[in-house]
Image (cartoon, rainbow, N blue to C red):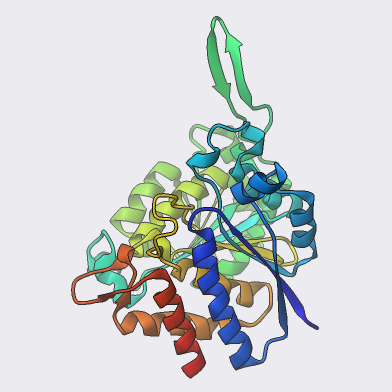
Length: 359
């Protein structure tokens, strides 16, 4: 049966980096004779400019019908002054909620060729392979009440961090299953010494641990986890945490890999339908210059093939092609070091596609 992939380029550098991932998809389709069709939809600021809505019904309908979504990036200063509910970011948040994409997987893998590009010493990060599992549809990003109001003659901003036991159990099961398939070590990150919501988080994770006796479970406060990621990141295998902490920690982990331009992600529902996107933002300051790194988006495509289309063989081939191109010394500006050849966004995409075809 043909699989349908929806392409949602978005804003800023989104269209540029997604275009390179689509090149690689075409190369993979030809090499592996995949039965895949694609469609495209507007989202974020690009959708607002046309429809007055960052996630118009036509885009949401296409997203619901697709087997998987390849997403670029959204947002930029162009839309900072519009009504908050219509800003580009609200389109992505709504898309995650409408599709039930509760499990965000963010691998931080250091390709050996980029050890020198990391901000840490090579001996600290060499061989790094971490998977951060972030709960994506709950917590403080979605909790109610929220807003800004007047109190005692001044403005007060407020948000609510809330998780139900079933939400924690759902994401915990995903993390335990992934840990079982990897190094059998799971670190749950919380702030249970201060926040009751994460005290419940810790209790539920401990309850779940009884179902996974082969997985070693540890707990760490988020401030310590942030420090440990810089001090000794290879102590971690799989980390699981809530929406806010996962957002911050996964961006920190990205820099261990040399650049946030190397970090892919998957956002999955319970049937493993997913939205796949690079972890970086829309980078409007470099949009249109042809210097953005497309590798996180290409690696997100590999995750799409592995998790939503059950084609781990194709995903592995794409990842090998990326590593081969890095071995050849090709680098975009964000990961460039002396002795390597600096290439454009399009040149990097062309090189990965060519390697995939040739392998």
